[in-house]
Length: 133
Length: 133
Image 1 (tube, chains in turn brown, orange):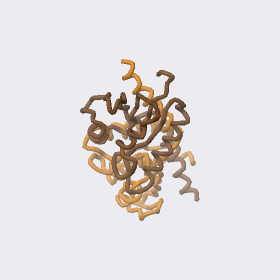
Image 2: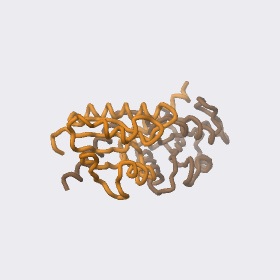
Image 3: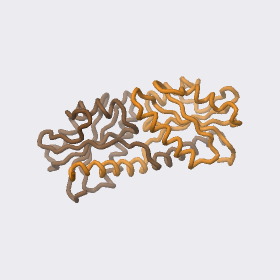
Image 4: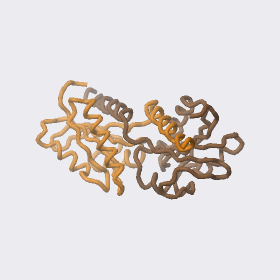
């Protein structure tokens, strides 16, 4: 991975409740700390602002040419395979597209990993506090 | 956390595509390896089997008395605050209920954490391979 500024659009599901937006913004901020070469923006598939399109357009003036679109979802599914690709103009299975002069690649969602299992165990252990209270 | 066998129901969203079920089952297996005292089962909010109710009933005969219901979702939202509580008989905000003699507690979803950010960075780095191919 080259040592050069790039755009990173963290895409969230969006929700009528505030929690999804808060989570996406919080994790995007954590990613930004870990990836100093990334210009990080967020965009939501539905219900929240900015939209994905607005998120992409927010890279105007930043000087980035490459944008990674990262869907911050657990699993592949209809949103990952169809809805988000439709919104950025990708055909199904396609991973790369040019948009407004940007060279965009579409990342995979989180997927299964021991890091998720580790965090899950922490939540289960925390839930046990209810028994002890 | 006591050193005693307990039930752990890992709850997934469910999907018309196979990926959510595969992810939930895979992470449940990883959790089971990390928590040897847990009798781990899965249940789905919708579209997949077993349902949440069927998942709870699958602890019959295992000898567990306590069951942690862990929603394997990223953020709180309507599913976490209303849909899943409704399915297990919890009133909004309630964390503990008795069902069929089981003492059930309801855990929080994954939420924001550096472990999620770390895995996110890995997916972003992997996406860069498309530029180099």
